[in-house]
Amino acid sequence: MNNKNIFIYFVLVILFFGCKNNESINNSNLKTIVPQIQYEFGGGAGLYNYAPSVIEDKYKTRYAFVCQNKNPFEIIDYVYLFKGIPTTNGYKWQPGIRIVDPSEEGWDHIHICDPDVREFTTNYKGETYNWIMTYLGVDQWHNHNQIGLAMSKTIEGPWIKYDGNPLISYADTTKWGVGQSTSIVLDSTSIRLFYHSTLKPGKSFVFRDIKLDNLNDIVLGEEKYIPGMSANSYPAMSENYIFIASEERKADYEKIIPTWVGNYSTLRYIKRNEDISLPVEEWTEIGHVGPDQSGFPRNHNPGILTDSKGYMLTEDEVIMYFTTAVTGEDWLWSYDLYSARFDLKNYFNHE
Image (cartoon, rainbow, N blue to C red; front, top):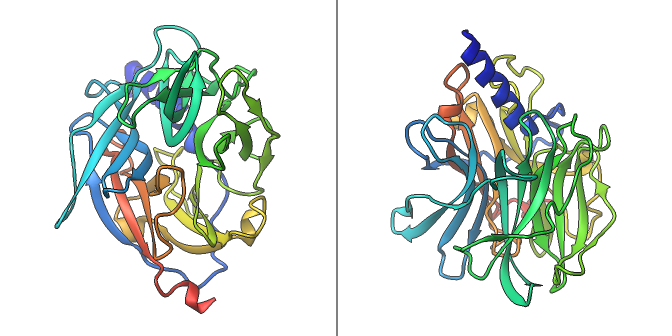
C-alpha cells in the first residue's frame, strides 16, 4: 500500500468509525423471521450510499435521505434525497438530488452525513418551517462529530441550517463525539432524539426529549441511555410496540476491512408500554440480516421505514433499509442500499 492509499485508508476509518460497536448479537430468542431482501438503489460507479432515513407519505411516495459523495471516488459526504415512486413492480427510484452540503467554514465544514428528517413545525426568525433535519457535522478529519439542525418548508427543500448549530455539541476534540441521530415526534412542541455518544464509556446509545417548536427557546432534556444497545441504532414506534434496528457484529466477525462497520443488522422490539431504557437483553429479537441473508459480508447502518413523524405505517410488517458492503480494498464503492421486509402478520399472535 503506497502512502496515498495509507492516508485514504485512515481517513475512511475516521469518517465511518461511528458505525463501530463491540456488542455481540443476542441469539437467545429462537422465534425469528427470515426477511425478504431486495436491492433498492445505488449511486453509481465511484459513489456510495449509507445511513438511510426513509419516509412514506399518504400517497405512498417514499423519500430516502442518505449520505452520498458528490464526485466519483472523492470521499466527502453530502446529504442526498432519493424519491421512490410506487409502481406495480415495486418502487422506482428517481436519481438522487443533493440537498445539504458541508458549510464553507465552521463546525460542519469537513463532512456532513446521517440525515434524519421529520415533519415538525418550528418557528425561526419570524418564519414557520414544517420539516426538520438533524445531521452529523465534522470540523476536523480525526474526531469531533456534533449534531446539527436544518429546516425546510417542504420535504424536498430548500433546506437552511440553524444559526445556533450545533444543536448537540461535543467539547472534546480528541474523541469521536456525537452523531448518527434519529428522532420521533412526541407532540407539537417536542421530539425524542436518539444518537450515538462517546461521552460515557459503555453508554453509547442515548436519547433526550427536546423542546424544539421555537428555535429561540430550545430546551434540551436530560440525556438517558439504553444499556448495551448498539451505538448505531434506529428506533420507531407503532401503536403497540417499539422497534429498533441495530448494527452489530457476531463473535466470529472477520478482522478485515472494513472493520468499522458491522456484518449484521438486527431488528428487536419491546411493547409500547414498557420502559424504552430497558437493557438490550430485555428486547426481543425479531430477526436479522447477515451474510447468509444478503449475500454480503457487511450489512450496516440500518434504518426503518416510517411515516413523516417516525411512527410505523403498520404493525403487519417492518421494512428495514440497510447498506451492504464487500470486504477488501473496494469496500466503499460497494455501498448500495437494500431493504429487508419482515412479515409480522402472524408474528405477534404467538406471543
